[in-house]
Structures are given as C-alpha cells and as structure tokens.
Length: 158
Ligand SMILES: [Zn+2]
Image (cartoon, rainbow, N blue to C red; front, side):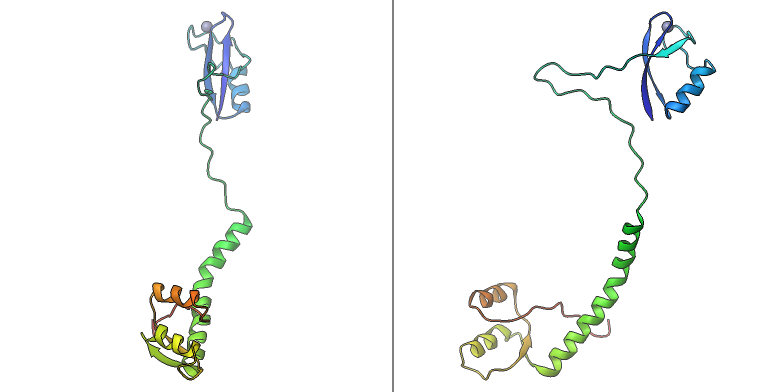
C-alpha cells in the first residue's frame, strides 16, 4: 500500500491509499480518483512533505501498511528441516553415550557428588562413575575442580 497526497484542480488536498503507484496511475488516467472534498476528478499528486513534530515532540511518521511476512528463504527452509531432523539423531547419540557410560562406569545413584569427591581427594579408588546429582552439588563440584560431565539422561524405551 502507498499513501499519496493528492490535490484537485480547485486546490483541495487530501490523502488516499493505493495498492501501488501503478494502481494510482491507472485510476488517475480513468479519472477514478475523485477529490475527497468536492469530487473533482482532476487530481494530481501533491508533493508529500514529511510531517515533523514540534521541537520536543516525537516525530510523527505516517504509519506504513504492515508488510506481509517475507516468504522463507531456501536457507531458512533448510534450517527448519534440520531442526526437525536433529532430535532423533541427537537422541541416538545420547543413547550411545549412555550405553558407553553404563558399560565403563560404576553407577553410584544419587551419591554421585559424594563419590566424585572421594575419588578426587583419593579416598576412593580412581574410577569412572555416573549417577545423579543436583544443580547445586554440580556447581560445588565444579568449584572444587572436580572433573565431570553432564548429560541429558534419556530414559530408555521412550
Ligand atoms: Zn476538490
């Protein structure tokens, strides 16, 4: 949409919306654009001056017609397709990691933080362990310089 300021042969000025400049030209040629004040069909485009508010006021801007949402680019479509694909592959990768951990490490359940500390300070045999711990405990472990990794633990058969 395009807003034109128009002026009739009698000098009335008015504004009118058109689909685009071609639509205006077509309607103007066929004298379909009438003056909003007197109905005079002899109208011409007036020069549009930007409306500027008084000093200290916000600048008044003609609100443009809302633009239609742009069609997704091929890249965006590709990204969307990828996003739909990832969860399954990510899931499979995490399941593999889980299987590795279960095979090579000892499950210590919710005593993970306790055991990790014991191993770190040499009170327990050095070995791989896995288990559950709270965010607070995980943070404390990290602060103590204890190495561990965190994984989203995907339940099996789900
Ligand atoms: Zn007029």
